Image (cartoon, rainbow over all chains, first blue to last red; front, side, top):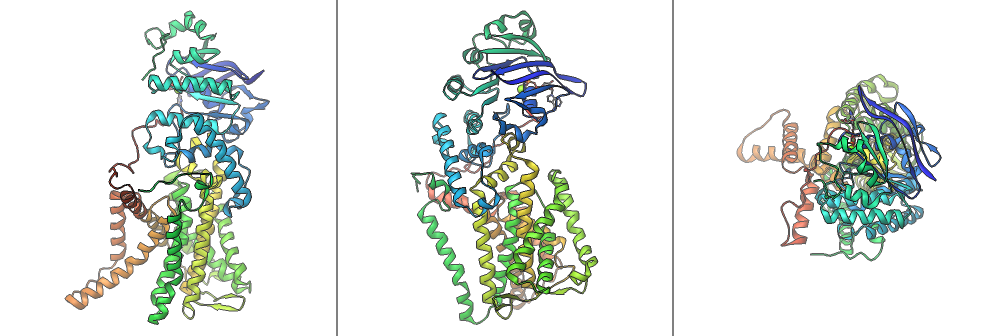
Length: 263
Length: 368
Ligand SMILES: Nc1ncnc2c1ncn2[C@@H]1O[C@H](COP(=O)(O)OP(=O)(O)OP(=O)(O)O)[C@@H](O)[C@H]1O
Ligand SMILES: [Mg+2]
């Protein structure tokens, strides 16, 4: 069953065609990876799914909803959560508060009941905290629970951002370069988490990643993009040995089977 | 050093983190409740009136703090909402509406009108929003003149006394009752404010302040959430305006001027942006400066026979203090206090950079 269907989508920035007639589907329960050199249009595809950008042509459907009819703030309500390439956390808040914002789509109480802190608001708060606490345990964030984001190391921020997305209990998780800037050990943790997210939580994952080691380890299907166009789709090994992909990466030296992380 | 062991979710949800903190706030409550006793003892309530004025400023400050400190939207027009609340209150009371209805209603209508005025400009960012509200503030005096039948225009309007179930309250004839009334409103609003911050609504405000793009990606509707914040903020300012009217006794087109709007903004910056305490600390500073200057003047005059009569000295001093804060203590008075407290709590483990904001991860302008 396909969860996300992107059909023939094109997006231009002025004269630049950032995404050129791309079609893809993400199936329920799979980990789908997007790879490609810098500027290929990978993040732009994410930003169209998130409805930050409007495609000029094409359609994007998710779980029975026409995403192009929705606004950015409605997208999480359908069950899509994401992380950003350049970590976008709420800097002046604690880890706990960041994760709680991830629960926003599940809020049931309104302004009035919040202001007077009604019994309903209290019960809802406890429920949110239970859910967030599970995420904290899953990602081993206990030590950072009450720390302000501003003082956290880069690697931890990446995990917190993943946690915030998980806290919303999505059906589809969009990860934009989850391993960039991480150490080898941290990248390994990330790989385990992504596997658990897929197998234990039953969440489908679509990720952009340069680290081919991570990509081959966790993803089922891989799509390679370059200059906004699809080059090849298949297993990680198939895509890596595809002539068009090799040519696109020629000289950039980025695609590698060893999979040491890019700094 | 104190360790707070968390044994249940309530530890984070409760109003107070630990018993010692609750005790401190209980003591503070006792102190503010007992303050009038001192003035009864000395038989002069003049200073109590000043303290009441500080509380009223703090109420307006809380309104602005919610908008600027917690939602990240600057406003240079909050005196306008105070004016709305004040004149609505005067007119309701004049029409025979009981104070207990007139007062909250004035606040709410000020909130609704404020939101309606703000909606078109809420799409603006940072400096543009500041400019739009600044323009609003500049126009307020003129509108008061135009709306003469309701405002008394340049001649001004007298503010009727408060009457709650037959109890007459007037700033001068019953200063103690007025103090307790204002104190009650202030404490009630603090409680509302705290509740907001520990529930989804308040978290959506701070989310918008810290990252609009992330807030949207988490399902927060920017326009609706900003409008909610504006509504609450203008309502608090409206309530403060109504109380301000009662405190002043008489208001004219010059009462709620641009200087007042700017003072409110300076107040919350000096107090500490993003903390409820900041509204109170700021109000105390704003309340103390004129008194301190007057005392300083008379001290110089009597002991050294020096007469300083520089016009605008107050504003200059105020500006100087503000610049000082922005340069040396951007977290405001409350931030300074937090640092001192942490120093003692962690003694001897305090590090100098503990409160430093990390700026090493630059964001590019484009959405990633
Ligand atoms: N907001 C924007 N305005 C103009 N051009 C943009 C914008 N966002 C992206 N682009 C351009 O569109 C192209 C695709 O960018 P995108 O961010 O999707 O690349 P990417 O595949 O994510 O690359 P990277 O691996 O560097 O993250 C690039 O040429 C980029 O410069
Ligand atoms: Mg990218």
